[in-house]
Length: 375
Image 1 (cartoon, rainbow, N blue to C red):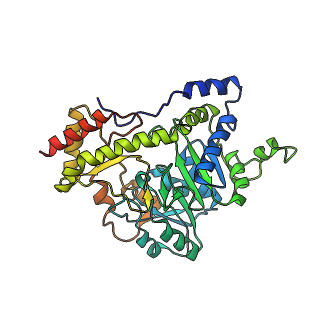
Image 2 (cartoon, rainbow, N blue to C red):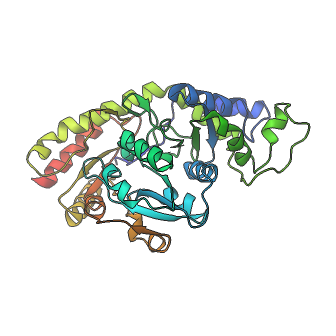
Image 3 (cartoon, one colour):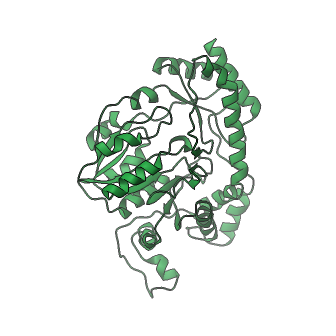
């Protein structure tokens, strides 16, 4: 059996969790949480990074920091996870979906401007598969119309756009450390804050709307409720698990990239024959081998291929169902313009097994079965 995903584990996770327990500091913002925050800040050159309980909560914090209000509009792709939209729907905003580019599966930067209205408050680019959206164009639009940019970089840890780490380019960036991601704490995320003057409010929101963090720093003599917030602080045990992997981040990156490159090498003949489509990486992007996907001719062929691989002990999966086609998507948002690619391309895409420690022989076996299917 070749699984789709195995959560990363590099060897020191148990030791670090035991150390956190021994320190009698397991509720969060202990030594390991701070080490994780510092790693993100150093690796992305971001003013402030705050570990959160999930990427979902990181996006929710970003929506609060953007001061999203009922009646506001937020532009994003429909081809994304529900959390991208939910964070803004919970603030009373309407979600405006625009079409994606078929090459990267990212939001089409050339369609955003036409979707902007006098109620638009933010643009949320989603860096699919750790491949960057066209951020120069998005930032230019945001500056011209006075909009915030919230990067959904859930899949983008250690990816770059023109040398800039994803998550550090917009006003806010959001990472995921879910068990399916390159670096994991089970459930977890991180909020990246570009402008230092937003950091104090972010800490307050993260601590249930209290200035508890300032109290522990000795900056106030007691802490109290000062803003709207929630409990977005993760357990120190989760942070300890994650930090073991961040210490080996480059090793994990290199391991996944080797698998990604082998997939591409072995499947290129099928792509050259026009049987499948392989991922496209723009020249100005460095991706992180978060996933390897292929595109079949259409939905029926993809369904047959997934079933064929399953019969041979290989788990491959399709990904998002576009949000605008979901009941909640129709209730809380609208699709602006034509759906030329979002639905069509999403029905073709299939993700192959990818994780730290995936064996070259297993990659070869997956590719062999795919080739066999098309023969």
